[in-house]
Image (cartoon, rainbow, N blue to C red; front, side, top):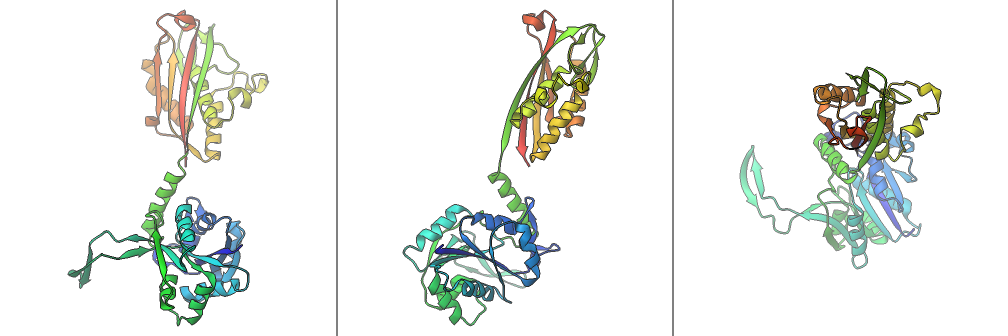
Length: 374
């Protein structure tokens, strides 16, 4: 590969707090560094780490070349550049490990700029008013004209930036500063607000929010079920025993509402229906409580990394009357699912004396469930 990416991850990041350096802290259930490396998948990646962190690299489960960093950022970058020297690399991107939300669009803009410039870096124009301060008071103002907030990756022609680092005395804030010291022009390309650098604890919460927005995954499932009346003196509906002059016929407890909801959840996961998970031909499910089925469906929800956002169950019958029991039904379903009652809706309607429900031959139910990735 003629383009390589250097990920600078040798710092200690003490301002971020935590028991480990910020690049190794967890962000959306993965180390920050795992997100950063994944953004450059497909490139030759060189990871510059602190010697104390070498044992952590295996946990990243990504193919990278590892280089030991130096005491300063520019020393770490130079170590990686020297490791790449003579390997045929013509262009290099240098990126901070603590910027895990870098997008393909920004990377593409930097690389495109290198077609006509020796160096290129993303930045955002300063839009806030700028003050100078002393002793906690405003001492003056500063024009924001021509000022930018620097970001990474900063890209360069390899031989030029290697020569610039070799000639630099050290102490540069970033690689653009090294390039500037060597007289190398650096083009500015558009950065992104999401390409933030994790510096303080609050930055992690912001990054989590951005990742949730990027990874938004909403699934909707529908369920429908019917059970005929039979002899009995009660019916089970949405986990509640409702007194009635008849019962409901079914292989299990025939809880038509819970069956419809369970099928809606399986449907949202694209995992079939109750019959596939609990075959009616299997005698062990004879007379089983339907909460077993619903609990299993919710177990699959959690195993797949989702949560139930809300569900809505509609019972279709002339009798029994559902209204007096609706709150208890919502509470029963909420307890099984493990969510607040406000996420559960149970309501009823009639078919205006039409059809099998109108003739009071049975009860039908339909349900909708919405799942969101956590």
